[in-house]
Image 1 (cartoon, rainbow, N blue to C red):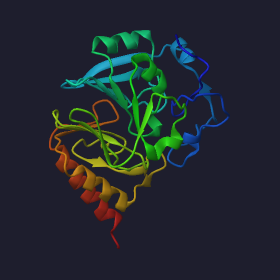
Image 2: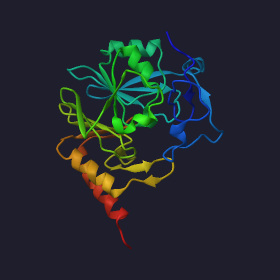
Image 3: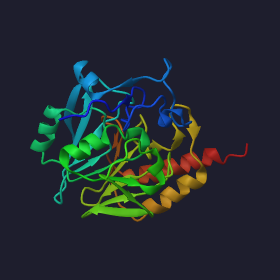
Image 4: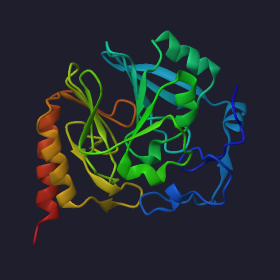
Length: 267
């Protein structure tokens, strides 16, 4: 069933369409090449090493999908069990028949959307397994490592992908960086675009997390303008239990105010 020759970068976990000596995603200043140099693996090697899927509830009608042991950056995806059809938000590298069965038992996947290139993982494998489109903003087209007809590139500020499920091109972290708003759940799914802090009453915004490069104030202001029409209580970040549970919209606004005040301090 699986095409094993597609190489996967060990550091970022993104699967490429064909062998190559470098990983452009890791060579970009927002990521990094592993300290041991560029290394590659495959899905077959990961499964042989004992990696498996981990499925666990993260909220009402929200199911987390991760990997044990963790792979690459270690983010988890989220399956949104919406009445109009399940949407997979963000992505992981691992996939196997057992994980597909578990997701099928939860209702399958009708659409996939990914916040930014560091989380592209094995998105084409997932798209093919569930016959689901993958929504990526046009501004990040050049980062798609395995081009495929399953990828739907969209333009503009917002795109509704199902009833009450709207992608918003916040543009933080990457020009095509997107978040997903679920109207009926009053929730924002943010990945690394709006990063939930360890103090889960707050969020932050970065151009590069591993290299500690802050995001530009004008980019954050634009993101806030785009988010303003949407109501949300919860903000689901990229990691297990990295969730703002209440007053999510206020948390984003006051976190941005704090960030901008320090970024623009003249002293």
